[in-house]
Image (cartoon, rainbow, N blue to C red; front, side, top):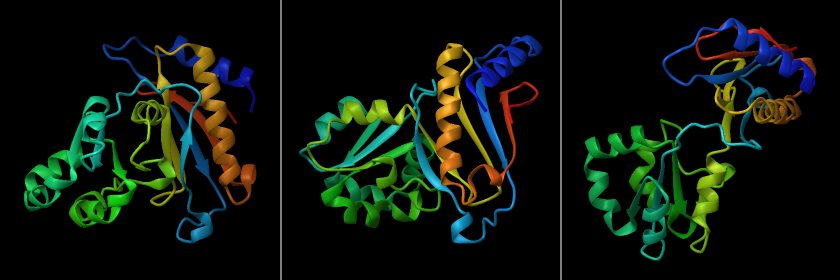
Length: 217
């Protein structure tokens, strides 16, 4: 697959799709083969940092100590200070609301044990515990603005449930060059993590939210 193939697919999708009353997203779909997701070597669980923001509004919640709470409140969608963990843990309704509302949770590294104790039962089953792979477990002096920007360009790739990968790579109002670069970067990164690389690909498709799929490879 190359840039020209992607650009031609984008052009075809644009010409064939109807105008919608919302901004659609481009979805990259990789159908896999000869891979057993029940075995550890067949499970992919990575975070891909794209060259450009996807356009999705990312809501981040900071779980931090008093030394970071002001920065976390100024930067993230919401922030919870360590002193409030215990009381919040008793309020299951509020905990579930926060878990549903936010896409990522960032924890201060030196209080990660307390974060796990207070939030693990709610965030764990949803796959939203602060993850070091995503850069979401941070030391106290981390620049949170840079982290927020990074998370806006990040996509989570997982094959834990089925042998297919589907990720959003950008909104339709993003320019074609940026979409193409996001697709190429995501594709190359994912292929590199497959056990047999390209030999594990059955097909690679691209579509808008409400459009038909176009084959890339």
